Image (cartoon, rainbow, N blue to C red; front, side, top):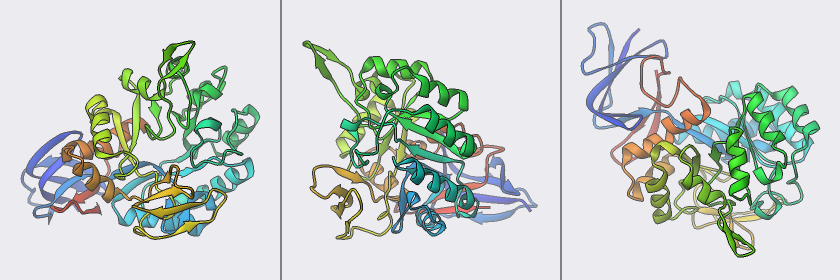
Amino acid sequence: MKTWIRAKRLISDGAVTENTGVLVENGAILSVLPTPPADACVVDLQEATLAPAFIDLHCHGGAGFEFIDATEEAVLGACRIHSDHGTGVLYPTVSAADFDTTWRALEILEKTVSKAPLVIPGVHLEGPYLSPEMCGAQDPGIVRKPDPEEYRTIFNRFGKLIARWDYAPEMDENGEFADFLREAGITASTAHSAAQYKHMLAALEKGNRLVTHLYSCTSTVTREDGFRKLGVIETAFLKNEIFVEAIGDGCHLPPELLTMIYQIKGAERICLISDAIRFAGLGDQANVWEGKIPYVIEDGVAKLADRSAFAGSIATADQLLKRTVGAGIPLKDVVTMLTATPAKVMGLTEYGVIAPGARALFSVIGEDLSVTKLAI
């Protein structure tokens, strides 16, 4: 049966349409119409805003779980808390780990993603081919140079599952890993990197057009023999074809810095991410995680136990929306950074926009910026 969903406004790919509706049938969008057909069931969202389902490209876990825990309970528990807070499409992130840990995590994800209460197009591997000097909350004893035998073995078993793989370009000395990712159809991203401009250009030429959580473990200007060398941050600003992630939890990027990134890159080149760890969705709790890399939860964020740096966010999609709008960025552009831009980065055609042929999976945004999912 056809359903016509009316909203006060509709936001899709940077455009705002007032007092209109979306006609859907069998889980797909048919058209955008100002009035309902006679044979359609009507769902009236009153004063709410209708947007495409939010897409989180970078999420480690939530509700006390992380995907690297490698249990079905962990995968479903983390997915459930993010689904409850407005995420419709999610890429589970597996942190840098040894071969066996990564393998177990991928095995469980392969078996479990179809049971999740949200859409999981694929898995995101954050490492382990990262820079030791930029490892942040990643285990410094784990990060290492790309190992062809290792990554090909992982790909040969889980190639259909892996959608994205992060690495530090300066660790990929001959560009072999970048070539491998491009040939495998896996989205490459620069992460935890001390790269200079020359490294970034070489990676860009091989198809790496994404920077993981800009300003978190990303290099800046350095000097060699007195000459300044651009880092990851400056290259991302200089090259318009590079997309960037921004952790929109209100802590990793203060409002003025997030606004600066927005003014330079624009909503069409920014993906808002949660980078959420296991305490996401549980509120600001006085907890200490006694794992291999211990951290404390306070001030609305996870910090390394010595409080020298952040260890990951505890945000959910609804908080990303509220805090980014609170930084002074227009709602329509915040929605773009949560939908159309990440969809473009990952090559998604059925999500991220409200258009004929797209899936009927939506975010309903209340006047108070609360977020709920709607699937027809």
